[in-house]
Length: 418
Image 1: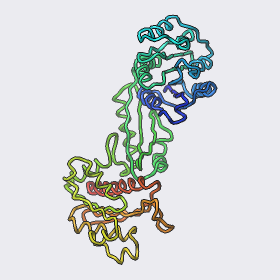
Image 2 (image 1 turned 180 degrees about the vertical axis):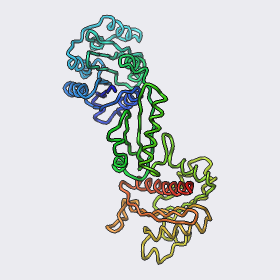
Image 3 (image 1 turned 90 degrees about the vertical axis):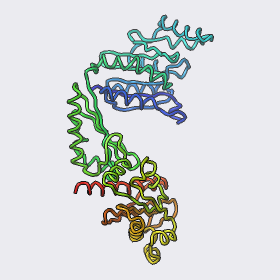
Image 4 (image 1 turned 30 degrees about the horizontal axis):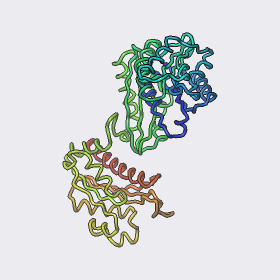
């Protein structure tokens, strides 16, 4: 498998005033071609830093693809450093100089002397046409290495890559006959390191595929890419890997690709003809909002009670005053009484209660910020779970709501298996 290293140049990227979207685009396109991205580097407009990034990239991969630093100013040094690394010298290309002059003539502007550098290239380099700006790119290849230079503005870079670079990569590295397929398996429950441990050799020593983990708001996404010369064989292999992942992670997997936990849970509620009711304290109705964001949620959502105060818990859900006094609003006992009171009021098949400390204040040594109790009743059986979340207030609330949803999903999935 061919490999690539991506270099994004520009001091504005290091200062944070501009977001590096170019490397994201390039990573995705290269991966889809069957080229593995070995790494990325973001460097400022410094000759030494750019040269070091190129040297490191070529030592780590078959090719370096960079964006930025192709303009006419003194700090546009990318082409100069590429020539140094590839041991060649840029010379003036008359045809390219006429093209740059013509660009300015058509716009009724004089061409600054500094733009001449944009018409200089080493012999043997392929000049990449820029249909959206003055800065041409460069495709410089020798017996062992390739450096591709693209402009920094994203609309220029994308156009040049798609029209000038990708077709050459396909031909130069015989990638046109290769097939590619991918899948994202979505997990909730175990953390990233736990998932990696559970996957074992599947992720540590992949055979003929790539596998990577990404953490997203409590979810772990397992990205799998399979390459080959026949799409049917790729799909067959991808299905086999997916089955092995399922064997190792079981019901921790809630979906694949575009599936969301909310849609999966809602689908199970509808298929089983069940309705759900919610009693939320620290999440303040967040889970109810999530459910009602889906069209047609009235088919399975009875409603929710935001019992934020102790008084609301007593008056609306029947939580006993002595329970609150003895154990507190954030406790196993209160979560249980909340969900039992809710099921009596609603008469639904499923009921959920959430109570906790979202912070930033209100915690202590016994009950720290992030402590949450979630109660679930489904078809008469109940459970209460204690969880301690990390993070800021908003994240704690989101994780509490998602965890409650996951508990419902698992319970419904168990019902389907009976």
